[in-house]
Amino acid sequence: MSDLTFAHISDLHLPFEPQLSLRQHLSKRQLSVWSWQRRGAVQSGHILAALKQDLHAHAVDHLLLTGDITNFSLPGEFRQAADWLADLAPAERISLVPGNHDALVAVDPTEGIGLWDAWTRLTDGWPFVHRVGNVTLIGLNSALPTAPLLARGRLGTQQLVRLEHVLSTEGAAGRLRIVMLHHPAARGAIGWRKALADGDALRKVLASAGAELVLHGHARDARLDTIAAPLEPIPCLCVPSSSALPNPKDQGARWHRLRVLDNGTDRRIEVTVRRWSIDAGAFVTDGTYELCLPRRAVLHASDNPAA
Image (cartoon, rainbow, N blue to C red):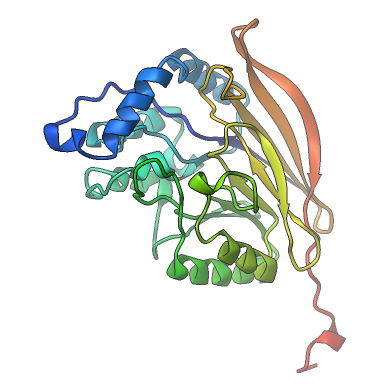
């Protein structure tokens, strides 16, 4: 019986006071500055400190971060985020994918996402493949610069082709496959302005090759959606911002503790919701439930033309 635990966190928007050059003011970053002036008090440094303590207190095996670590895609933010992550846990115990705020504009990798190589650990490009016990974490990069007022994502053909190969290979090996990306994978989970442009193509790959779980952020509320798959639907689980104070637009900070229960035939995920409580001034357990994961396809001798 496998008994691994993961923490899913997202959309941290680490506080950072921007000092933009004239050229940077004439870019999409300026829109984020105006947004930060309205939302800076919502993304709480106090909650971030409490989040770090709560993650340590629950001693999970591995941390999964699904993007929007920064706000403005400024080089100083990427360095600050690297320092924050280095203090959170050993690098080999963290897997992260970027979000749209981590790609507001094109940034040289040496000053941008390349500073996060310790946590993406790319070998052959995106998606990454990180193996933890009997679990394979498959990280997709849906973040790319977009026009003002848009927060859409795109994976592209090359990533999708590699994803299908990885899913098929890891599935044939009997491993439990968790797909991570920032943008929701399920149809209708978010409005067009913020959706994944090639979501249909991603869903086609998942329907063909299968996966056991998809994790994402980007939406402001916790969500549980499904995607059609070869045998049974694939659950898609969203955690909202893990650092936001509850407000009319945000459900409020939370993170999910995911306990993998796998006896070889029956695969489930026990989800414990840790929610920020204003009254308690701390994260509290808001409930626990189990997700039944898709059954593993079994190839019988009669199904094998070579048999």
